[in-house]
Length: 539
Image: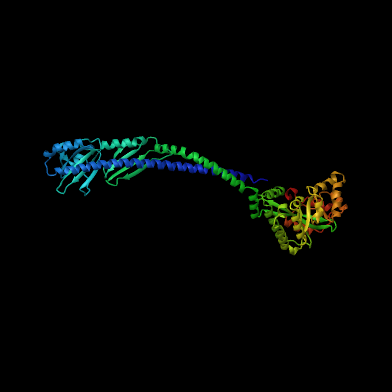
């Protein structure tokens, strides 16, 4: 029986999640990369703009420095020089001198055009510094266009000033930001912003706009660069086509690795290992009847697997899986442990037969003899007659080594039986060459008793051969009185099958032995027994 459908569904869910994880990580990476790309573009644009603003500031301060030569000259004497300097040098809207708060000279408006506050259309800042600059929304002569004013005040109350037309900076900002749709805003000190760019009308709902603020290290100039959501979306699409093919490959690889891991985790090997740890296995015992003593003379231990959801795994399935997955040795050791635990509650006569099925892999294992002797030491207090039931296949490989191990165990009082005799490909000489004590006739031959109207020459030959080889014979799978009588008439000592008793768990066995263990087998006994346990549950 394969692992549960719930586990398969869980496994497919895990595989899908494993495939989605790299995709999700890739999507996150594309967003991070897009953000990084946009941010780097903003940093580069801000660097270029601030560098240009600093160059304009350098030009303004250099102009003011050059005007210091006219400190002690009258405005009328220097009017022509101011006009020439203001016209021939780039960026400048006007330059001039101050007398206190009054503009005494202007390259654009001549002598005494008004106060400084009137010229910049706002009160001058109170900085406490001799040098200051300020961005303004407009000047008296050009009120609709921003400008930057630079002022140098001298100790005697006079000073010099220069105004740079904001259009130069606006044109440069538009050239830098238009291709990306940036909203740019630059301020000199705490003045009015020199801004370009429009607010995004329909922002992308998946991406937010990204703002970057920075400032000059040389002058009190601050800059804000806002990238619209469309820029983020564009950068994300570029990142998507770079990252996602690689991510898809990783996704497929991770799904394959997860599927492989799940296959190993959900394999029979892991299922059996976890079932051993969780103690899902238990032992059922099928009584064996002795025709001579006319009582139960022993049991065969049968391993059963019951899932937590009360589902029973068929023995032929999990035993075969354990052999295929290399788990039969740990499983048999677990069986021995369970039997030893169960026998602590037993009250049976000495030499009570205990049949244990042994797989070929365990028989050929280096620690097989020590495993069996250790088990025999644990249950010595009950003095059971331990019988190892081997299949014919167990005797084929490493025959010499197997014979040595069996002889070693028989020397310690442990018996050996061939199980399901006649169904394999074993040569009859093995019966003479191997140290054996019992021969269990396969139920196929027992069933033939009624089918062939009591004429079973092959079965008779097996029984006669066993007697000549001094082997005790056990007929398994006995289900009718006719089969029982046939075997008794031919000297078969031991009987096992549903006609006598079904396999049962330990508690049921203890109760059964008290009531039926010493009762001779007859028709009324068998009829009552067959209604007690379902063969589907017993396996």
